[in-house]
Length: 491
Image 1 (spheres, one colour):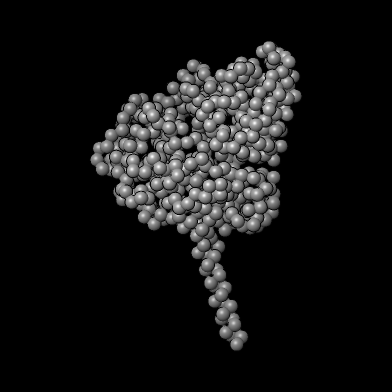
Image 2: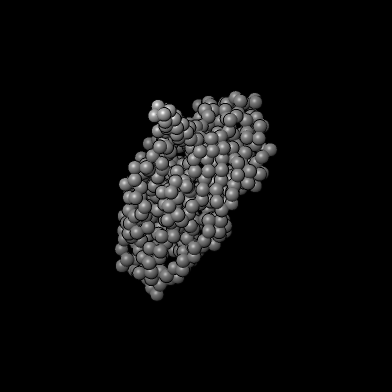
């Protein structure tokens, strides 16, 4: 009897261990629900956070270390003059609807992204392309009008993924890519579910099902992790809860870096913010460390321009306009606003914006800038601020990699114009040498800082919290993505 009980107990234990070891599902918490699921037709980082590398792939991809890796193109040849890129596509790749990937899909995708009627939010990535030609079924030749040192990197952005003409128009609601996961369901307001693509051309992921749950509320996010309702939160919106997880051996806490320049975005074309003295006054009125401490519980690195501190070309410019309320008042008076100014501050849902906005509004009020806070949902922000430029000030984290060139774009939502800055970016676009590129990056940072284009606040930290039995989660965010292709459960 005892022997039978022991044998049964041993078998039950073995089954329990085996069942745990074989777990292949994962629920991930994310802050924002994407407006749709087509990364080639929207600016929201929330899109890439679900589908980049998981559902959609590009000719190249950006790895967890920020380096360019082969993607759908397994090889490429660059001409001596840097103007012709010949991409050799992988054999046997199919889209999730069963259609085969060929060179025609690449021609379609790149021409669609750079066309006159393109709705691609990063159309500037394709500016250097003069033509795209299919050489044979699996070979594509891209000709540039000028050398572009970052072309392969640009082709690794989510905005440059390859789509099929058969499904391109319906990708917003039913994304069809070539990636290791296929789209299953989108429960609006709740979650997106993906499942493993058994026909994937590459190594099969360990996970068979991944669900991205939308939990913007910091308290709810913390509770969901502690209860096990979600097993990972790549960027927890509740930095105040980190000590709780650090003290709990069930969790891994990984504080990493991001490409997220968090800024007080300013409408440079709208009076009185079109006056550099007003923008300088705002810069002097901002106490960055107080914002980091009060809104982010000390997690974040002060910045003085639009550039990531971990980049080797970074210049420390946060003291260009040091915290000095008296000087801020003087500048406002010089600009003819000695009696103060009023404006609006539109705040999207992330906690860095909502919490940081309250602190910034209080700081600016002390120098005579009275802001009316307007909370907006993400879809409203994209329409009102990003698209229609209907705003005075807003707070947002720009998480696109190495994106200082956005300040040279015509009609971008900052509405900033400076021919000297544009000339630097133009030279950067045709410069391949690393040392020369880094010097141009430094010049660009300096111009933006001196012009006080935006209120440069801090580099967003990545507050990664996940089950200690998970491995393969990214500690840093070189791109705005939650790549789960290498994630697995361990003992």
